[in-house]
Length: 186
Ligand code: ZN
Image 1 (cartoon, rainbow, N blue to C red):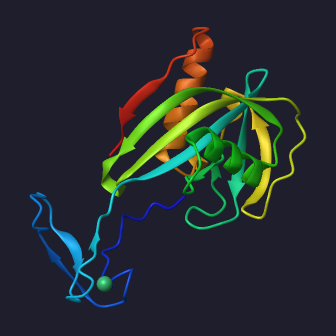
Image 2 (image 1 turned 120 degrees about the vertical axis):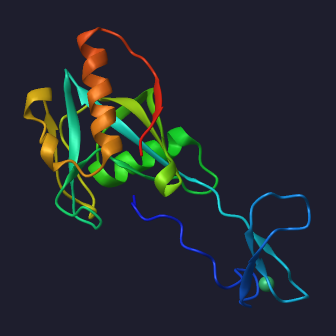
């Protein structure tokens, strides 16, 4: 997961010629990076990226991963990452959970859908019920462990969307509810 905004596309992804920012002539209302090669003219659309992840939980505790990668090296996060082409949101969230935590779990329901317009991202987290408390984290993770609400390193979390999802999870748990929360963070 990156916190960087989308960089401009300066060279055509199809033919390598320089691009120019211009309005496409199809009635589009935004300027796009358009290939300047007359034989190509490919229009490069840039759209928000989806970040998908889980909040793995076991008997009221949640699994956090200590990041072994930048950005936010050494900070704690929920397993999450960018969706890959050709996968569903659930498949992407499950893949990230296996890669980053090596956890065994059952996918459950959607807990948060968070728009982050400042970086043009949408973050989606699913509850995942852990079926084991043994973890085998991959190279992106220094440590994976379970935390109860009062043990969570709230000041050492990697991302605002992680904090927001954790808060919703424990608030729902207190009320014995399972809601899907959708909101935006700046
Ligand atoms: Zn081109």
